[in-house]
Structures are given as structure tokens and as C-alpha cells.
Length: 286
Image 1: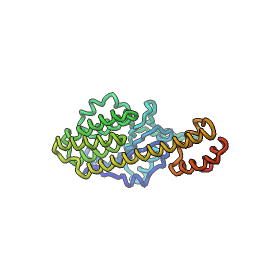
Image 2: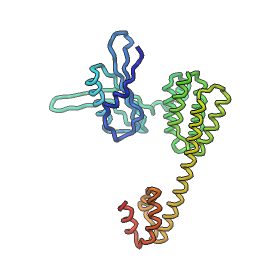
Image 3: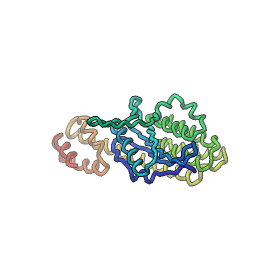
């Protein structure tokens, strides 16, 4: 019997988690290889940032899943954070001689960073997903490197011999994860078209390539709007300093954090300012 996804029901058991980004938690019912009639519920929790309450949340999920289905549960945490020292793997609760000790499996994606070459050759689709994640982390401040790696992964998708559906899913995942600046996204769109023409295999459909092009155009427009807004912020800052003197870094950052309509309002209000207290009071009033 094939695995059965219970993601929808997992959401109903959701544990609030404000701290840390959780990417894609999964709950799947599987049958053991032994061939018996025992089903096992596999709970996979993906955590993107260190969280002191994470182990307690894993224990809570396990308890709720067992209460809901009365079946064995296998819990595994996929840690996608940047802290090599954060490795929660157990939850302990003690009170007046009572003790609960829950140990769960942990996969730390950072541990795979030295294996990228091997992962690129691995036929397991999750290996490619791990590479995409690691490349994203490693290229936060280098858009051109990210572009090169994204093109590499896209080309690799065509060479893997995967089914059309699996290639499309992996492509969407890589495209979502390795986000590019507006100008570089336009270059990536052209590269996707070139790869499509070279391979003559329509794994990435016209609709999807049109989606990429539309996203690139939107990103370019957004970049232009952000540039215009930044110019307006710089102008307001210069006007403030001419009127009030040199601003502290705290005050400058407060102005930069304003929404576009608030920046426009500040450009008019500053004409009445006579001191720094007027600026700070205006910002505090929201």
C-alpha cells in the first residue's frame, strides 16, 4: 500500500510557533517493510531557525498524533538553520519524580555542506533539494553566484531523466528558493529558454516559462519602485539635516523604516519642525 499523506489533518493539530520559520511539515502514514498490518505515522518537522521551544513542540505534536490515530509515530526534525551548535534531539519533562523523556531523530542540513559534489550526483530527488537549500544560504550576498548555481541546478534537472511531473515540481522548488534580484532574474529567464531549446524536451512548460517572465517583469518593476522610494527617503533625510542638524543613526533608521505614504507626509511636516524632538514625536505618533 503506498504512503498516505495526512498533511491536512496535521494542520488541524498545529502547534503555534511564532519563533522560527517552518517550511513544510509533513505527516505520512506508511506500512512497515516487514509486511505486517501495522501502520506507522511518520512526522517530519522542518525548522528554519533555532528555537528554544522546538523540542517541546515536537513532543506536543507526537502526543497529539498518537491521541488522534492510536498508532506508532516516528518523529524526525529537519534543521535548516544556520547555527551549527543548535541540535535539539530530545525533550525532558520532570516533576516530583515523574519523568518524560522523548528522543527524536535529527537531520542537520548544514552537515551536508561538504558533500555538495556527491549530492549533485545522487539520484535521490531530496539530494537536489538539499543542494538548493545550501546554495541559497551560501549566496545571500552574491547574486551572480546564485544565478550561476541556479542555472547549474536547472540544467541538471534536464539531465536527470526524471518524469515530467517530478522535474516541474523540483523546478518550482528551486525557482522559489533561489530568488534572484530583478536584473539577474531576467537573465535567468533567457537561460531557461536556451536550455529548453537545446534539450528540446518541454519539461518546463510554456505556462511556467511565462510565469517566470512575468515574475521577472514584476521584480524589475518592484526594483524601480523601490529605487524611487529610496531616492525620496534620501531627499527627506537631507531636508531634515538642513533644518535640524545631523541626525543620529537611530533617527535615520526610523525614517528609512517609514512606509511610502508616511515619507511623503514627513516631507510636508518637517517644514514645521524646530528641533529633533519634533521629528521624534512625529514618528512616535505613527
